[in-house]
Length: 314
Image (tube, rainbow, N blue to C red; front, top):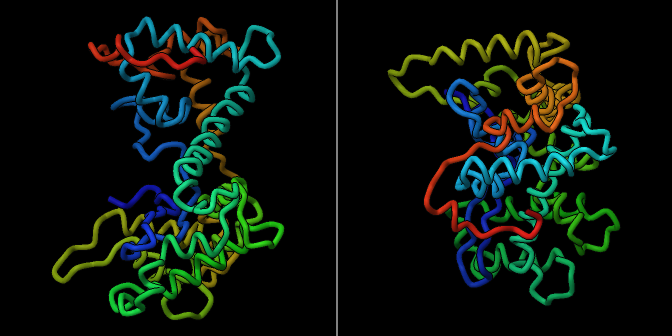
């Protein structure tokens, strides 16, 4: 099946003395709230990660139903910012966005010390380049396998765009924009540029139908074309190619990968509200949320769950 969503920028950290590791440097689409399939008929795992964040969702999975509900009750009180006893769609959306932002900055924190070599609380381009491409810089012969010089040039270009003050030193906000450009308004142009560079094989400045399909699927000799490919052809013709000239320009590509009319957090908030709002008053009481704790946080009863380390916030 077609890849529903691609993780944008998967950074492979390598030490300065090791061989650079090829990485997918293109952001293809906006990063979803979870990499899991969103199918409530199977499970609510996507909802759990969207609502809690990946790490918290895994922790909740190990708790008893009683402990899951207790902790969820604490979260509900935090979501109700105006303390009116209800959680609105807006408050639910803001909580989900908070979990999404936390995921981004947790990723930054996880990698920070690997690149801040001199511990001056910023990551310079030189530090990033030397840590990531150290072996290539010492021995360009390794470029025979991967085009590291091209990868390094792309990284530098993205780093300079993320570096708002132009000092070639990234603080944590700037490094977050570098690692997760799909989350930042000022990074949209570089996201589109990288996407088009990777898909536009004939270098005419557009993405035609053949290039669009070819980026998703390469038909092997003797293989029948999957059914979903025809569906994607229709998507291209009816929705991607808005001006019907047979190709996507920069604006059409931007609308494809980072659509302005769709927000994952808003969509998930509407979904959770719809599934939990028993009296259909467009807001949730704590009871309504706790009654659907399986949708929000889930639970797997395991012996390990009783021994799980309790976080201070709970």
